[in-house]
Image (tube, rainbow, N blue to C red; front, side, top):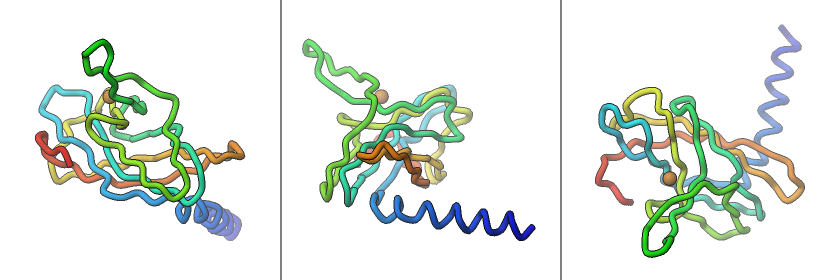
Length: 145
Ligand SMILES: [Cu+2]
């Protein structure tokens, strides 16, 4: 029992630097209607050091991807990207019409007022990865921030 406790304390202390380096503001997920199995997650990220958001996971989604909206021959379309750079000291916004997190294969309807747990995986210049746990608020369908 003593060993388990010591392990937990160690794990918690190792996570602290990542939390201090990247702050997450106004995280939200767009509500879905029944049968809809895809939605978007949005937030503002601010990192003290140059890092990269490389992966997102959620227990609510079978799969999550980082997407970018772009004009392709006059048609607005989105594509998966390998990550989003977070420059030092500069806020990066994941928002409708730009970079966003796509939650796919949703396990249930996402309703206004719910919170959606998200895990962000951040990669430093040294290729070391850390995780940030985020609770995103669910906002109504028409919400555009
Ligand atoms: Cu998308």
